Image (tube, rainbow, N blue to C red; front, side, top):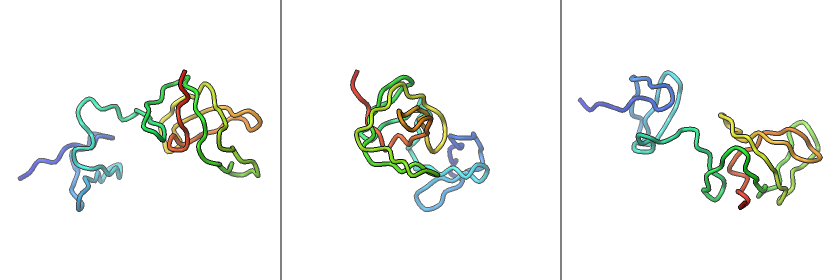
Length: 114
């Protein structure tokens, strides 16, 4: 029998194959075979261009973003300084002038060169 790899998120050994994905029944994580290699950091965050982001970086917003629960909009080109990376769907914590504390998705920003 073919031994499937453990879940990269929770290390469960009960993974199964569903079409072209591996699935973990315990945490519902899905991943492509070969997508997670030994030594990969699951917490590495990349911007829209594929540049690796780090705590304290400055980024620029590349798309108008509506602020939930408000009529405010974060405009294209808004520069955000001193970001903090966190785990989760919205993986950037920051403060935006005129709006306040926000969480952003890394796919909607690009890194500003230092």
